[in-house]
Image (cartoon, rainbow, N blue to C red; front, side, top):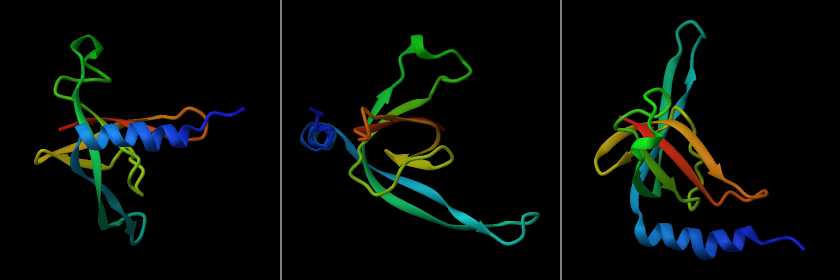
Length: 119
């Protein structure tokens, strides 16, 4: 017997993030064009996402991987975009660079993403 993680995601995780979260914008950089020695940046694509904004506990900051001022966003899977390092996230009128993305993924179903961001 297999567990239905999609049902748990849709019925619990998505509902809680929607209830306690906020709207943010995930921006993916455009695909560069032109020669490799002089690429031209492509047009970025923006996606509306739902996030829960969390602070990172001081005991988890080591000064290298997690720095003071870093934020942890719990990002819903209710979007077609997958967050990646190098993307940006705009929340509360603040622009953050995504420095780490970790999916909560039991089995083949992504329940949500933990996204570490830095100003």
